[in-house]
Length: 386
Image (cartoon, rainbow, N blue to C red; front, side, top):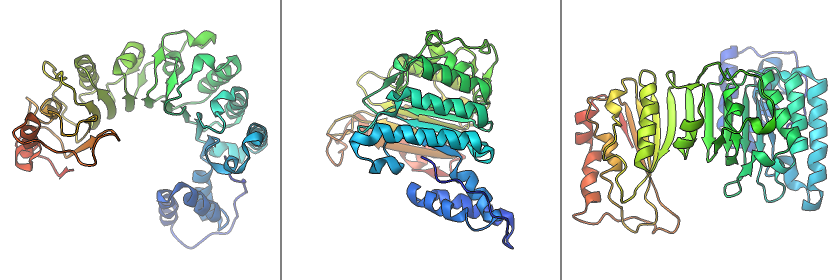
């Protein structure tokens, strides 16, 4: 969950600190376990190396039964072992202000077949309470359940909900991430006035007033998001977004599967038209055309430089008609400002290893939209296609 904390050594190295910092940051590209071992080793070298390494090593607290020391604990002892880890973590946070000041993110991973951490709400609440009191630099919270086993916050219990509310109102949160969470009160997001990044993965928000937990009346403060992900169900977000403003949005990821979602997505893009730089859309090919009467026109987004389309083809043995979903690349307004276009095709595991393009089909004709010569007609600034 967290490595043993040690105070920094005082000796230094005769290298520019900028070079040392870049080296430490590069260690994050290693696989997670190797990166943590390398960073832990760096904390023992010198102050100039140890301080930046320690900042990365202890910046994130992960509560999970799927990794770390708990993986070696027998199933029958897991609940007790997790409780003991919580006690040790509480003690470390409460007595060591230097360690607490390094914490930037709390990550709760539930849904493990060994032990669902999200069901241990009292223990998680203890960590939230300690962070509220001592981790003044905390700016990110991630709560994730397992795919196929969503966690309903309405079942979390009063202690957990009160501790969460206390935490989000005590620190200046900039990043919130929820994955496979149900019954997320919109106030649990909209009361974070300093929020700039919101990620909702298979998460459903509700207007239920804090699930009975009183919240300070700060939802009147405007939240200016810079980054937004909601996959899927853009309609749910649109209904519950309250005081969230998108006029400063730069990175946007959404999914579109029906015409109504296309209209709502374009409303969001239009609100962010003077700021949006990166757009990712998850699309599903269907018989009904999504964009037939849509106003979506990426040519009207003057700062959009990067576009990524993830197209889910389902279980077809051949490519289904793609003319509709690829029409995004053929905007009425042109030239666009795009520098990069990435198109990714995803299909179900029950589909064949390779999808065929049938001759003389609509899907076959739609491929012409991806030919470089045709792309450059409307995207004259294009530098990369993949």
